[in-house]
Image 1 (cartoon, rainbow, N blue to C red):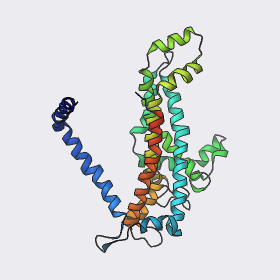
Image 2 (cartoon, rainbow, N blue to C red; image 1 turned 60 degrees about the vertical axis):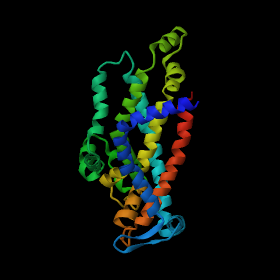
Image 3 (cartoon, rainbow, N blue to C red; image 1 turned 180 degrees about the vertical axis):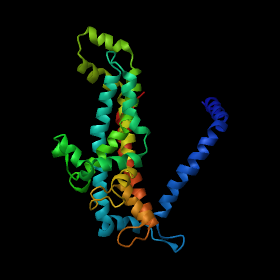
Image 4 (tube, rainbow, N blue to C red; image 1 turned 45 degrees about the vertical axis):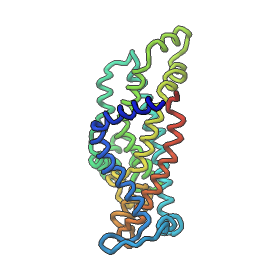
Length: 305
């Protein structure tokens, strides 16, 4: 046993020079900022005005003081809704497109893959601004009227009831190429023997997908769900491009990312003074929320030995 441990240690030390650059990068740009954010959440003030240790006071204010609690509860609900839209639309369409693209009878696969993936290569600010124009009835209203599509002439981004859904769907349109390509890669790795046996047993396409394809790509489904969850709770740019950092109209599109920006960087209305301590407290709470969401999905979807 001791000899085996010694061998494993020597092997690990041999790999250390190759791992050192990546490890150093991770410590400097990932681990240190995370730990420093945890530290800052226990202070109030800034470097210029001086910091004061307040313990858990920032967390208490985040959940009890109306100025912060109301905005946080609303932003959290919007972010959760934003995530659910991505799961139901982006990822479900992604697996549907991947199933079609891996079908042997499908023609012009490369063309469709390119069409689906092109939006991913565009800048979020550019696509957000273009969709903002397309959804503006002043710009597109006359054109839609001529096509007898007057029912689409509506201030989609100016209505609280539709603004967040529109922003989420635009985000789904832009990023659907990533889960689609990941699902394509996963489906292509499944052995054809499974499908041949299922065909001999008389299984139709839906049964093959539900009982063979989906269970075999479960780890990839879980990984995509985790990436979607993490990315949506960090979303900021699409709201910034299509609305503004206040989550217009009237905070209807306010997400955790925009709230963090206002609290820790730009300053919350009406004071307009940044509060790094409150921003760090919000980031810390979000970190633990992500951990609580990610760990169960990993446990349920990843393969066991």
